[in-house]
Image (cartoon, rainbow over all chains, first blue to last red; front, side, top):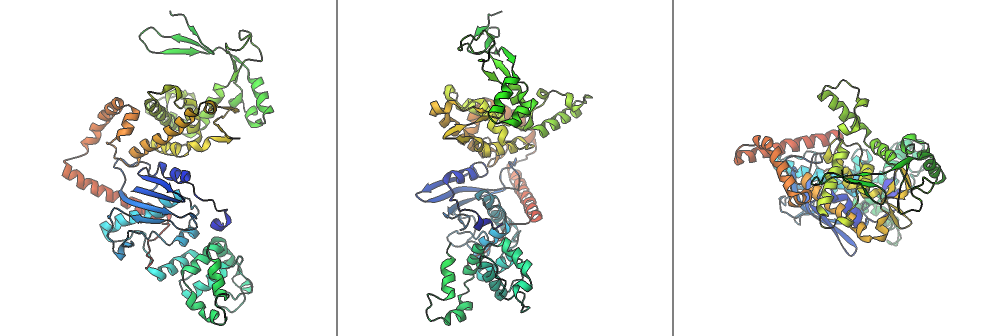
Length: 252
Length: 303
């Protein structure tokens, strides 16, 4: 546990990327220009655990992937470049082909294996299988998230395993952003008791699943500045307020 | 009979002219004790104490060594029986399964243990046959530096995880076989699993082309087999794989197996709509599988 934060961060090498796609996605090619690794070509959609189907893959999509240096901490960007998916908001794709695969931090928290191979055969396969399915049936087979911040909130609440209420979610995330959940903070359940005398075990269980760096990133993406502005205003210098400090530290 | 031809280690018995076969005969003496003591001294206690893996080692002749006609401590050692036992251990489940299937098919009353290994072939063995065939065709012009069979066999057996089909075996092997090449102080090492001090890839150091050829072959094999298995329909063997398995052999094999497959297809227009329905049915199964094990993601949008 503490999967992403606990591990020393090894940068993905071109060799590792090539190994991850070598057999499973033979129509993708990986290349490196200076620092960045790019993957491009045709992505094949398969049934799970099927090595070869007599009829070939279920579907193919032309894609381009930009891998960030800090994969898996940072999410890869995937573009559909074949024009196979209509650029409408209901298709979860931006006009430039940028595919909204999933809420990244939700995957980091809920999946055990964050290797590139696992991403390619997990969320990416689900996304493109979903696109194929939607084209034929008009339905998303695994559900979909609301767009924008409401979708983020929903995904984070799911990942934490708590009801989706913004105030409570933000409070949980502040608690989880600490290296260790603070026992003297009031319990997120709203009982008014201190955490250590209330839902301490539950908070520790979530802390085990959601490492502080992931919680901090979730918090930053939810853009809670408005909520925190009451805090910040109390400080004369906006550069040293707790909000500002949080902002800076969250850049991992 | 033609007189056997004496070579460095073995004697070659040539079959009657015209038949392009020969048999190599290697004189040897049982020598397991010395072999096991050596293993112990090198720190491989488990191997040394495993009778199946090291109890049948032999001492072999080598005419380049002095007094090779006298059995002495200087004779080189070998352990083919131990290697075979290790190899069998890498496919134990599928070997037993194949023998059970054979005995049912042929209504053999003998117990599974009594069926000799050579009567059946496991997915590991079939996959290695395919890989070696691919290697032979790819290096038809450059036989001297082609990747050697013992390296391919050893790495393949390591990477194999009792997959039940040849395609799944190829996937595991081609994806993972190079991970079993160790780096021992900068030297690429493909250890003999029953004698870890022996490096099957020892020639790579003095002849870099051998190492390069191994990786070139692995890349090509990955691509050729994956393009067929992952990206093509059953009836379309990609050009490069066809070439690298021998065009003639591939064509005749496909011709032999295709009529049955083609009989299932009707006129092209109907075939297209059939395959469309089939794709939907497969997509449906794929969706169901994912929903059963729990999807990992849901599409979203930044704004």
